[in-house]
Length: 65
Image (cartoon, rainbow, N blue to C red; front, side):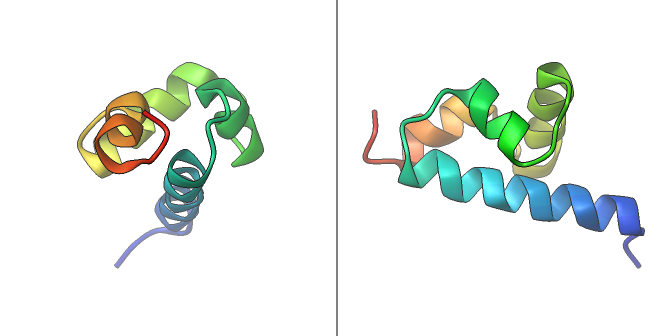
């Protein structure tokens, strides 16, 4: 079972993944939009859930390279 907090993190990171692929907006803007006050927390959480950094994810999966 997933805790409410873990579920929220997964939803936020899922939205961040969508934005990373659909836009070329700066990572810090995306982090703020999906609800992370601390950019470093966004980076660490993204890496933990997705298995790579947001910039690596965008580079390998996006049209915006």
